[in-house]
Amino acid sequence: MRTTKLPNYLRTYRKRAGLSQRDLAFLLGVRARGPVSEMEKRRRMPLLRTALALEVIFGIPAGELFAGMRESTASDIDARVDKLAAQLGSKVGTNKRHEYRTARKLAWLQARRGSFLAHDPQNRRAASARA
Picture 1 (tube, rainbow, N blue to C red):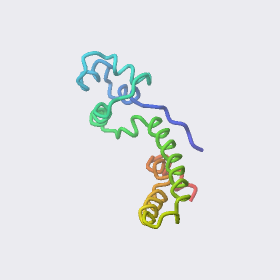
Picture 2: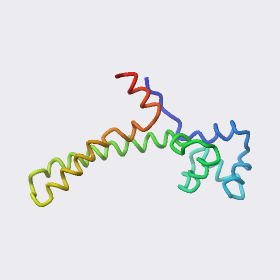
Picture 3: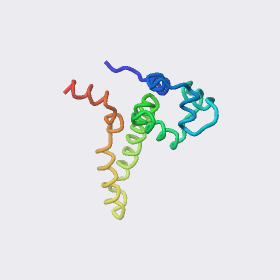
Picture 4: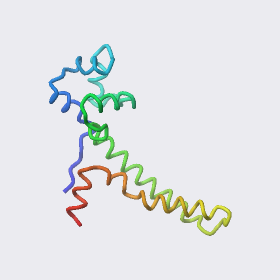
């Protein structure tokens, strides 16, 4: 049974560390706690630099800190991988000049299909339990 993840676990890890929003803001190099509060309430998306800083501060991969966001992004990408593979598949045999590149792209897409969600530790445990 799969559970839906929260968009982020920033508040959880901040509380576990015993940090206030103001403390975390200081560690991130911002003057006010507002940006931290907005990220915790999912009103603001962190910049890459901020996500990497949070990863360093808590010692937790950004993909785990923002697990729900990562999960929905992975689902979106998987859908687009399938769509691109279908588009490329319909072009096979239409242009001999580009046949090699198309085949290479299709092989890469096939190898990546489903792998975006598979990188999630919880999904890996569920997949190994089914096997």
